[in-house]
Length: 61
Ligand SMILES: [Zn+2]
Image 1 (tube, rainbow, N blue to C red):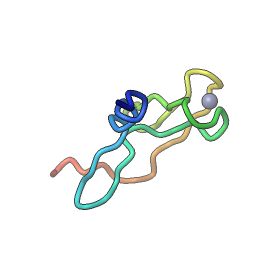
Image 2 (image 1 turned 45 degrees about the horizontal axis):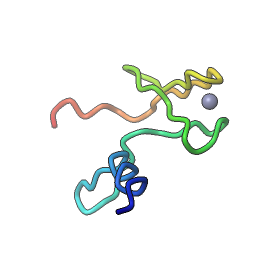
Image 3 (image 1 turned 120 degrees about the vertical axis):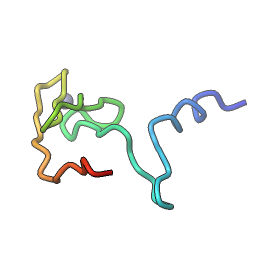
Image 4 (image 1 turned 90 degrees about the horizontal axis):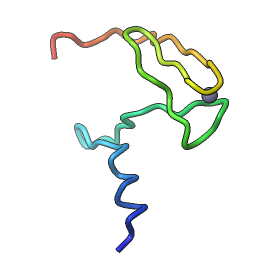
């Protein structure tokens, strides 16, 4: 059994036939380091990288 592969799948979600990443990786720290999601931004707790979300939130959904 591939345990590692199984746990990795939890980071993804199939929505409308698209593979959606549930968590965004830090571009500075690289794969494996994920950004913490905030109300209007995402931030890396390791290096302090912050990225403001420009997309409008779909509150109607
Ligand atoms: Zn980082």
